[in-house]
Image (tube, rainbow, N blue to C red):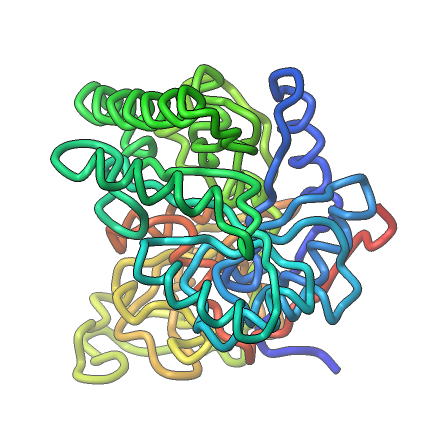
Length: 382
């Protein structure tokens, strides 16, 4: 059945991106492939299978539910859960051989009691807050000594096997001098904490801090492992990349033209009449709307690709459809394919052209594409 709107996922592009990034890793540096939020909207299970098929063996997700989905789909290797997991769900962490992130002492105390009660032991990584001000032990300032004592205690726990420790950069994507200075400060805080652990005869395990943009730009921050998410899917902001990486977009988001309407000048368009024809106009009715994840904020500002032409959205984006101006292009017809984001032989609509208008980021676009947009996987033989 032909879909009114669909996302074509090019698994060969995903694998090519992985191989390119992997080949440029420092010696003995692992890659954790981040597949949270259904692989940023690309389909976590299908992407994990393709990546596992070419040797990937360490994945990361945001929640216990995402991790179990991968395990139930026979994905092997290590799976790190970044986010908070309810204490009672630690049974699943053990059952599915997952790695849980530990975020503070209160959580660890409750976890330890639960694990003792059920005679269980789990694998874990410690999360340090080096300046993100989100999850984790503060590893600088007045809380440093308290955090050090608590983390040492967790490493020595009998029912929690701490296999690694990590932090997260807040500003690497900004790629300006002030942000780079702050990132370097975060790195030095992290290193200082790890070195003191070692001085206390603690083996910290796998140490990691680099995200996608750090993996591409900052090999000096590479430790035992780098974490890559948006880079895998080819949606890194161009301004953020210091050197040339030939990463390929993995997703092509498409719709179709359902109808072409000819209007006279001075005719209002769509809800609330936010646009009016300034001349005799041909409008194409496109089979996508905000219920599919195409942001209503792109009303009167977004553009789509049709037969190599860049066509502007006119009027307000509706729930299930929107209107674009095709007046200047006689070769456009009903049934023509519309590129919303991605590339084909004639069109190039970078994901960046959408999120920049929204003032957000690349993953905001792909993660917002709803489940009613059919994912179609190409090049399954990877």
